[in-house]
Image 1 (cartoon, rainbow, N blue to C red):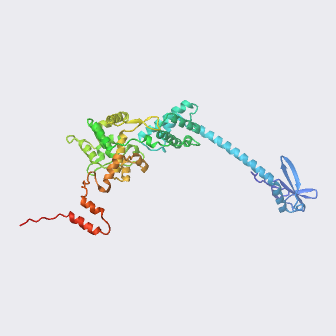
Image 2: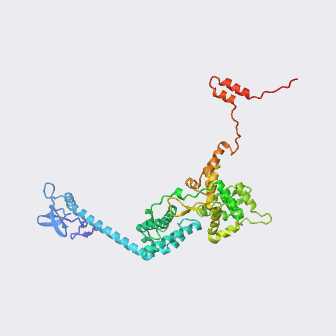
Image 3: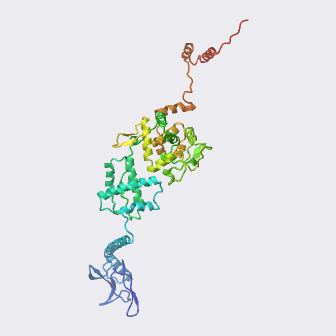
Length: 475
C-alpha cells in the first residue's frame, strides 16, 4: 500500500510533494549544500532510503558511472534501486491484507452466529417442513421422508451425541451412516432413498443452517439388483386364480379387477369416487396421490369391459348415490384406519390362498422381498396393455410414468404373453386358422417334379384335377 501524498508548503513559498511511502527521498547536492530535488540549481542527485530500518544515502550514477544531474535520469535510477525493496513491501502488504480479511470474516461469522441461532438437528425436520423450497409432495411421501430422517437422527444421537448442529455433520459421519445402512442389510433401493433424501435435506436447508458443503454427496448410489428385487408378473391363469379365490369377498374381488384394468395404485383405486367415472365417454379421470402434489396432472384410463362390468354391478338402481361417494366405501374406511396395512395383509392372504408365493429370499439379498401384492396388478395391466399393442406413450399417460425406463420396470412379457402376442401378429387371433388336410399323393408327385420348364403344364394339371367335374344325367 502507498501512503497518501502529502502537500506541504516550502519555507520560500513554493509547493512541493512528499514522495510516496516506500520511495525514499530524492535531493540534490550543490557543492556541500543539500537542496530540494526540484531546485533549478546545478548539482548532482542523491537518494536516501531505509533498509531494514537503517537509513542509507547513496549518490546516483548512470551506466557509465557518471554522477546524474538530470531529474528524469534520477527518477529512473531511484525506481531501479528501490524495485527489489518495493516488491518485498508489496508481498508483506498483501499478507497483511489477507490476514485482515480473514480476521474480518471471522468477526462477521461470529456476528451472524450471535444474530441468528445455529440450526440444531432436533429442529431440522420442522424447518424442512416449513421451507418454501422443499419439494411439493404427497403426505405419504412426506411420512416416508420423516421416517428416513428419524432413523438418521436416532443413529447420530447414539453414535455421535456431540454432534448437535446440522452444520457439524461431516463427510466422515455421512460415510459411517452409509456403512450402518449396509450393516442393516437394507436393499439397494432403500439405501438410495435414504441417501437421496439426506442430500435433498442438506441442499434445501443450506442457507438456513449456513452449510459450507453437503456431506452426503460423496456417498455413491447402490446399484439396483433388478432381477433380485423385481416383483413377479401375474400370468393370466394366476390372475384368474386370484379372482376365483376372492369370489366370496365382493369388495376384494371387484378391487382386483379395477386394479388390473386401470393400472393404478392401491390407494387411488380404494379412494376412487363416482365422479371419476364417465360411462358415456368410456374413461376415468383420476389424480394419483403420489404425483398430484408435484404435477397436478390427471390420468385418464379407458374403462375396459371387465372394469365396466364391475362398476355397473356396484351401482344399486334402487338406491341413489352421490358423485362424491366412494366406489369402495368399506375399503376406503378400512384403508384410513392404518394407511392400508390391514387391507394389504388381507390382499396378501388372498394371493397366498390362490397359490402365489407372496415373499421370498432372492439371490443377492438377505431379507425376504415381496413377490406378489397389490402392485402386481399394476404390472399386470402394463404387461397386458403392451402385449395387446397399446402404444407406450398411452400406457405412460395412464400409469403416470415419466420415463420409458420406469415403464420397462413394470413390463414383464412372460411365455404365456409371448405366445398370445405371436398369435396376434398380422391380425390373427388364437384358434382362427383352419386345419389343412395333407396333399394327395398325385399332387405331391407333381410338386416334387416341378421345375421352370414344366411350371405352366404342372399348374394347369393341378388346377384341372382340382376342378369339380360336372355330371350329366343320361337320357
